[in-house]
Length: 175
Image (tube, rainbow, N blue to C red):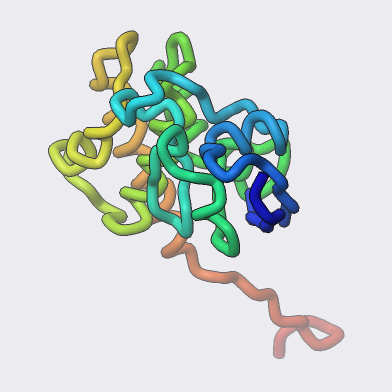
């Protein structure tokens, strides 16, 4: 048993008392109870276990949980801004058929999030490189890449939207 340590998952701090060799995947699924992150190959080959660690994608199947102490972990459950809503990447994956069995979806969405945070307007080739650690056996990737292109457009449009304020008019209307 290791000394208890804290990790922050989706903005919420958790005191963890797992074994010293426990992986981040195991702690997320078993100790914290978030099951959106999938256990696939346990060998960093499929990307189903990808989470964001301080905004960067990592394979949680091979990352020791204790290494995430005092760092921020984002899982698929924490991707959207508000509970009950979808992040633009999730929404676009659903709209264009980039989700079939769903096993790879969490890892794909988190890899895409990391990519778009660094490259807001990626080419199809850059998206392919950004997804190199994700294996999808159902979709053939074309719909996933299209979804990420559209999500990138959505995110760019949202970040360039001007803030509209309404000035109060004096009584009697404008003069």
